[in-house]
Amino acid sequence: MKIIIAGAGIGGLTAAMCLHRAGFDVRVFEAVGEMRPLGVGINIQAGAVRILAGLGLEPALAATAIETRELRFANRHGQTIWADPRGRHAGLPWPQFSIHRGELQMILLDAARAMLGTDRIRFGRRIADFTQDQAKVTARFADRDGHIVEEASGNILIGADGIHSAVRARFHPGEGPPKWQGILMWRGVTVGKPYLGGATMVQAGHHTQKFVCYPISRSHAERGEALINWICDLHMGDGGLPPREDWNKAGKLEDFLPRFADWSFGWLDVPEVIRKAHTILEFPMVDRDPLPRWSHGRITLLGDAAHPMYPIGSNGASQAILDGEAITQELLAGGDPETALRRYEERRLPATARIVESNRRRGIDTMLDIVEQRAPQGFTDLESVLPSDELERIVGDYKKLVAQDRETLLQMASQSAVSPT
Ligand SMILES: Cc1cc2nc3c(=O)[nH]c(=O)nc-3n(C[C@H](O)[C@H](O)[C@H](O)COP(=O)(O)OP(=O)(O)OC[C@H]3O[C@@H](n4cnc5c(N)ncnc54)[C@H](O)[C@@H]3O)c2cc1C
Image 1 (cartoon, rainbow, N blue to C red):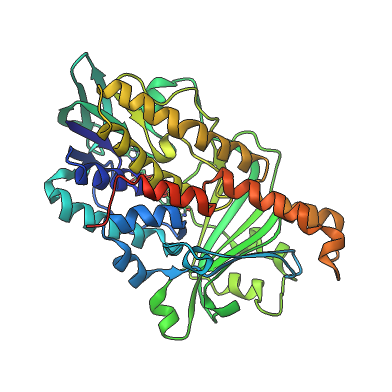
Image 2: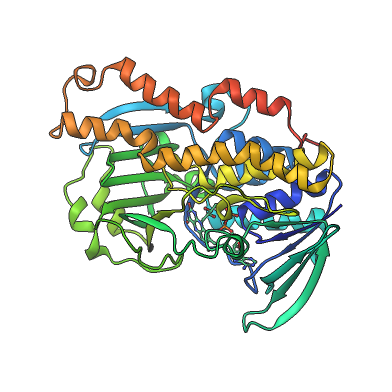
């Protein structure tokens, strides 16, 4: 079976490798002329690392990334609300990795080129239009000037072309720009001192003013430093039309630093981390409404093209990776391609829609908001502010929702389409 993938991002490249490994004939077409290691930090949850490890990528990831030991939620005074061991530190068979997105993308690209062959991943090929009939899909690709430079036919087309997916737009022409509830994010990377043991992801504050940070570089850690990826979320308006989302838009310190000026936690000086950044990017926190369907005959969607979500709970990349495995499993299970794509959608659409919706309701960040509401000046006894049974309910519900509970993860592993070689 011949499969065309539009988009060589995290989702597209992972799907390409899973499908190739399963014996499918895969070609990937990417809009940019040359892949550059763009972005800042990103997390790969243990369940998604399982899939990348099955593709043989764990050594490359471990050589670059930080193996996240703990996820810690704190109030805006730096007091711990909840701390959770992650990955192998939680007894799972796989680690969670915090990594620079650009490095992750280059690891995936190098591996995909080695597996599929360099000529199977084509750059400077923006999907421009496509048609399908009973037997095949034909897609045409344009260069940056809009000239059609290549046409490809296959049995299936997967739109893995990100939050501004052209494939999605064709089936939903009236959808418009992504949805925004008014939160702007400033993201940066700073070389600093290791904090809380050097492998802790911190989420501090509350929904309308939050500071997230995690170290992302093993080589810095080996030198006794921390390359700290950080994100400042601020509620700046009532939503409506978001500022144009551009992953490379530079941010300005004066727009957000004053709001975090007194956020000194003892174990981390937030304003200092922000001030010392060598990159600051600005991006609106956007998503899209879940779609009623992803698959139209021989064409389907994957990753951000299918389910862009708020970066709450670090799920964007991990869910895209899970899609790649799921579509492979359903195509391997047999039947005609249309039916397999419908099964893929039935499996993944409701699961990801629940995360999109939960993140809109703040997802696991609910605990931060409760503590801020009940104890804005801090607490001496957390139990009297957020009783442990209430906290456990929030955490347990969210882990089930995003398939991060141990039971679900082990069950998924037992049905894996990507076994280690
Ligand atoms: C440049 C960039 C920087 C990012 N930085 C961060 C970050 O710092 N932190 C973070 O959490 N998330 C970041 N993201 C988003 C993150 O990668 C995704 O949310 C997540 O990994 C899901 O992956 P995806 O493959 O579905 O989408 P993406 O990783 O966005 O990949 C989509 C790919 O499709 C390509 N594409 C777009 N349109 C077309 C078209 N018409 N035809 C063919 N190809 C097309 C894009 O160039 C891109 O390579 C970034 C995305 C991009 C594109």
